[in-house]
Image 1 (cartoon, rainbow, N blue to C red):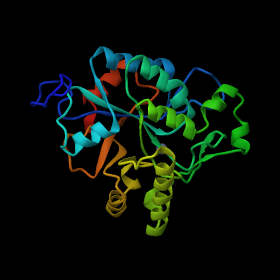
Image 2 (cartoon, rainbow, N blue to C red):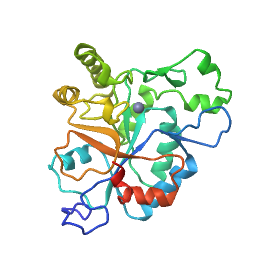
Image 3 (cartoon, rainbow, N blue to C red):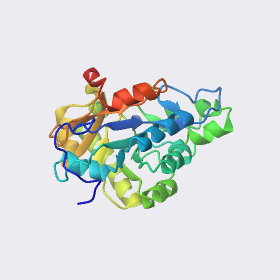
Length: 278
Ligand SMILES: [Zn+2]
């Protein structure tokens, strides 16, 4: 057993058996002005300082597969480990976040919406929960060419390159609809279409999923049971918190990182100071 793999013996390190799962969406340079920075985008400086902190503090960054094995009790907990996830699959994940993570030896994992991949227009969030790569007026409103480019979805080629370098991908639905509102047939179609495309393009069947619109009102037991029956064994929401591993919880919480998080709140989130929020 290598030094990085030691069985957790109860309280011997600060994160204990509660392994933090960070939830990011976008990392953007300071490009100013036209609406690209929202409550789910953090700056590249912020992201770099968070990766630097994890590296300096000796955190082991997990892959989705390692987390899944630990969650199901198939692998001993890795001491001081953390899972870094990105939702939605924006181009900035490839162009900005990934190179920064590599600088600090941190592993990233992506939850992708298969229906958006390789579309060339910026991704726009619609009121009913759809994410679309829009060519209409919203796309035209991006006056900053760099920001427009970073706001398109990732391509299958970029995803392939990341996969070949060890970035693992999970499922984030096909179209980013609110799955809880779909009929059983529509849910089955949404999931089958997405998983088939995922397998065809990336060569493996994902076993982890992040729910689109992952708050409590966005999922119900029947829907979760269906997702699990399709091989999605570990399912994350955006409910705040850190699951105690191993776990039988059907839907696991994460820690969303917001633009207003400085290193102090980042640290507090990882070590559980805000777990009561969940
Ligand atoms: Zn999402």
